[in-house]
Image 1 (cartoon, rainbow, N blue to C red):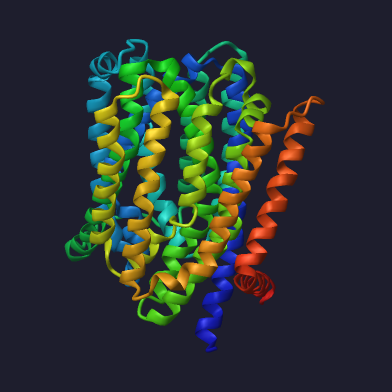
Image 2 (image 1 turned 90 degrees about the horizontal axis):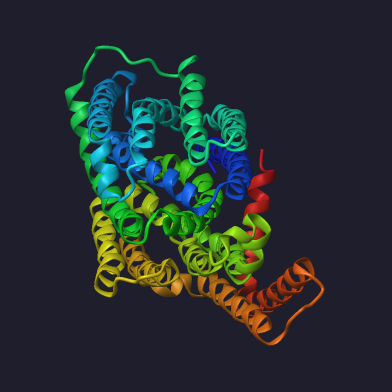
Length: 487
């Protein structure tokens, strides 16, 4: 291996480890705060705050214009090339935030809760700060400087957690979740801009703006379609079932998102940068895709299948009796996580192959598979809606895999043992756990009940995965050990 390739591998491994610290440590802090707030807030209070954050997500997604990932992906980017995208995104975010604030009462009325208006004004006011922070994050990721991002995430997460929990104990209700959310954005902004790795100036490069804008437009279109496919469901629940029902769905979906991001963000944050560096080496990209997808199937999918089987125990342990019934929403969403754990890298590989247009078409397909059944069936309960929603997301998975394999000129058989074996093991272990849950009752408490079920899951999973994918499992272990130990 040449020195350049070896240096890239070592840098990528260090960046990956710091990215794990950032995402796992940051998500662990966020999860702890989330669990405490879930205990202290009612479903209605949680749903009210989640509704305000939902509107923030729409405004910030449009405002960012996909420039962040476009900056990371552009290998020839000069510092001044980011000036025009930065000012354009910042100006748009300020404009949209002002519009959202002026229309807060009307938006709250459309969402069926006038109490939502002041929360909307506060969350949307934070959008320009989030967009500005995103550019600093992009420059740090571009340089694989994940250590500073990790420290920022941990410190700001802890501080914002104290804000939110303190407000909850003081009786602020849904404002506690909003306070924690906005505090983390503002603290992150101060942390990165107090000592910026990149400073904007008035030198504008319109050619670079066109290049970045072309990539970003495809990316933002894909994200908007994906957002529509997933968040339209949230809006339907808020407007038709009320904020209390949305609170149950939002809490379950937040748990699913936390778990996905623990593994997904750690790899994809580094992956887009590294894949861009080797985008001309198709053989290396093919090997990387098979290896990362296999590792995801072996390490990323099993926790989702296990937690889906333990949803009643998880709900009782984490959130308490006031959230009874949430397990019926958690189970299908966590099963989706088990399937989607092998898909998270597809977008990075398609972007690295120069096919953001294909990613957009896949997002349109997902939107159709998710939204059409919901609009036709119109489920009246959040648990039924969660099942229909999950079925649509799972139905889209084979199309994404096929598109990625075709783009990389790989046959389906390339994933048969490395990915198919571990996924079948996860499904079989989940089925065994649910069989135990149906036919065997442990009467000595939740901990023994959950422990016995976990043992059943682990045993069945190990037997099946060693039977169907012993070779790939050993190769993945050797690959990870070599990556972690290589200097």
